Image (cartoon, rainbow, N blue to C red; front, top):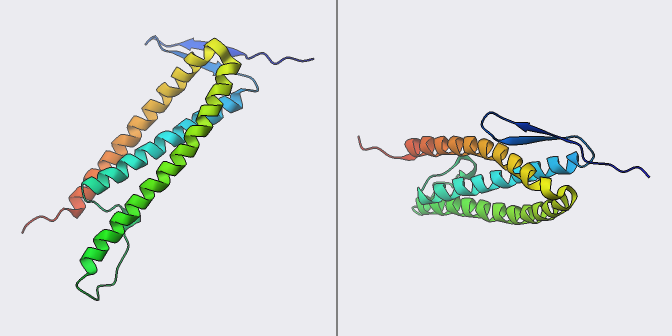
Length: 157
């Protein structure tokens, strides 16, 4: 009977942070965990962006829906339709986030059982890497919000 023993290498940076290199069959489940966490953080960032759009009364490009200008109710309908589109997007993202949280939870438990005491260090390494990526994502979304607010704010002449 052949046993697969997890092989790993521990790298310690000059900053004191430890990073692991995993080399065995469970590597695919660790990559899956990291991919799912990245997806989750992206959904959370998208929810944040959409909420900011609603509070700042901005319309992102995906929510622009043209309503024919045939009556006086056009502007009211236009505003309501775009708000409804953004709110529906938030609900959709929350549903996807819930499903993803369940998957991550079960995968986390299985990986914690597989890797025992090393899992905490591996999880921290994954989280550190993802946090750096997500910070960049939030900066991009903030720039997008500022650009939208400059475009859609009416300045007096």
